[in-house]
Length: 337
Image (tube, rainbow, N blue to C red; front, side, top):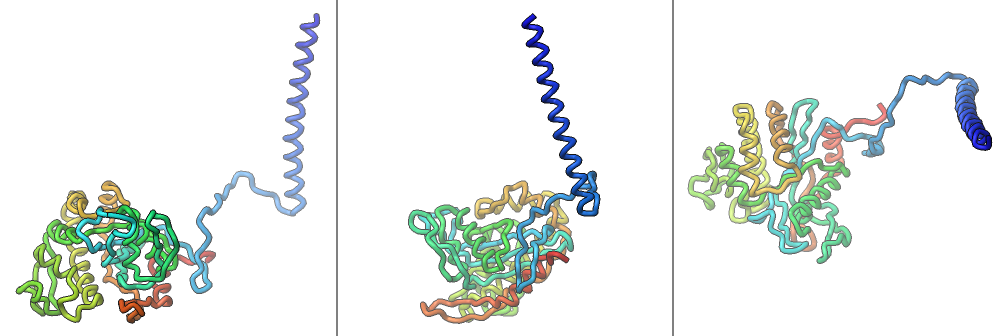
């Protein structure tokens, strides 16, 4: 008898809890209906609009912009040492003598190379002897690569410096190639044709002004790398040659990609011993294959002026107005339009 009474009491308690729960749901529903009527408009229950999780828009000259999602940025770097993976400390990574940002526009199927002067002045992160960030310094952007105990860290610091120079736009991918990689690239693509705009015969007897050459691997290295003993010895003259070689090499690569579906895989394998990148082989090959039919625009330069710093070294001061216009044109879209 006592057991039956306890069982009935337990059943009544369960029913009571269930009733309270149902009443609470009804109360919440009626409350929601009252709020809809109170504010004069019934709310749709079937439609759902997801929250926009994009970061806050970037203000450029007071106007809000978002980074376009259909544009990929790839930072190409040429490192002035023979082994991009060799680091003997946090300040021995070498310098990024060649800097080029590729803006890969998947919407318009176009690739635009943006050449960055190695002496461009910007904020770079300084690491102490223990590898900790100790602050920043306004210095030549090529020095940003020199910090870091491993090549990946140097690449990240260089990408960070380039992003800072370009209104804070993050860099998607980086590829750093060491000195020996110049000849390896030339060999992998079968050479590049160039017409010499200056006399380089001090480097090689065949490299005379006005001569058109299909560069050998040795000549390609000399053409891209040399500076001090030829012409006016300036980095500007070397950058013009680098632009010339880049244009020819890129056109050759695009042509080879359309002719041979295995070329991308072979190119990555040939360059792998000489480069550091945050793209694995599968991603890099897929990216190369995806852009095989894209138009390759003529390289553009960040505009600015050269001067000599108090320490006697060359400085390039980027014109911020033209840099902003270029970034907006290539990478951004207006917010709230």
